[in-house]
Image (tube, rainbow, N blue to C red):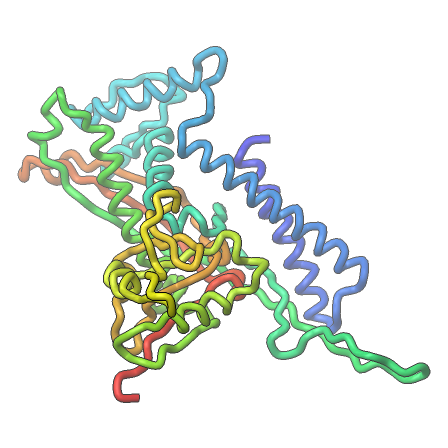
Length: 383
């Protein structure tokens, strides 16, 4: 079964889960034993499919997929790379093979699938939050059901014979992921393109991927009003510092302990580099630094046994700002309705001796499992 089929199967299961929840909600009742069993089975299968899909995507990103024995895949990739490079250098489409996906529209040529996939994989490689998040790829609105016990939970208690039990239950809620269109743009010097010794294809892939990854990371963390929620709007577990200008080791422990043990395995810290610098100066009661360089850690540092990732998308230490996120970032759901789509604009910027690169992506992100992620917020100054 190919990746597309796996994604479609997972999305169908999610739709079935939503139908079970909607039916129980409409009838103002808990799900029956049969419905709950069916729901749990589908949920387990969705989780298993998520792991498989993520593994396949990671394998693709590392270029571990072997070419077909007859060389078809390799030939196609080479043909599409040649076609793309030729179009960049000459503005002409010369590849005539039907399976080479390079088409010219009103505003320029749409790049072939293999080039687009390399850009997507590059984005995943350089954007850890996007890499770890739970990703869904489909059009339309995606509704993800979850079980909420915050207001009323299923309870267990001692009982006396011949007395009626008091019914308690949680609620089935859902989050909706839509699709918000975003556009990126850059120009490349025609002199650079005309240099036949320069690897222009790799240059374009890197330039587009870095720009896309930087924007996506910022949106996944901070979101935007009436658009993507991201972590900023979705994280409900918050620890507030006692100071508006400093963080203590005890507050970091409180933040880490907010996450249940079951979600600690894949947890990490996300903060600004200036915040990491401040934390590096904190010591325990024995005078030992609590954050140290670690050559075996994913990003070179560990704090209380978990890797530390720094990004400018998280605010530095300042009054009322969220300075740190901690937890398993798979609790963030990201839906892309459309993979990265790119157009090459040869004519529009000819007078500037440049070529335009126009990037489109449709994306949304919300916290899917609030228990997996927590935030450290700085106290209000003077408060």
